[in-house]
Picture 1 (cartoon, rainbow, N blue to C red):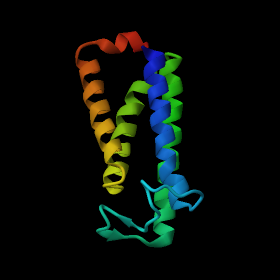
Picture 2: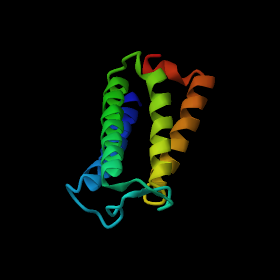
Picture 3: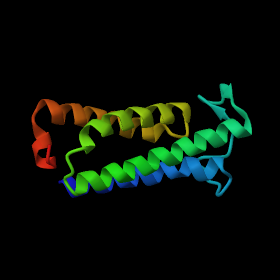
Picture 4: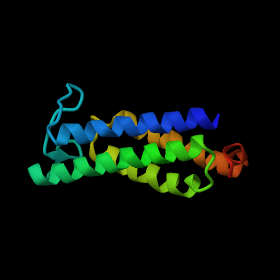
Length: 128
């Protein structure tokens, strides 16, 4: 189970890389066009601002990969970090709405599962 969750988080991290490559104009995707706005085009932040957001997407993706490896290898440090990371990822996805709406759903599901795992003692299977 811990390997599956670790791989899922790594995949979630890879999905975050789309924001980086799009906002740094490395690649373009029909589902996530280059733009310089956030919150459903309500807030204009310009080219420099969107590049900063792109770096945040990259760092978030890398953090998911690191935590995914931590879970897969049953490291004890991952649990407190993942709560903050999922919350940050949720903020990033809300800022990228509507293109990142799937990320919002995934992060909400992750938060619910993490709270349930903590409350029902399921974390023992993950080395916590």
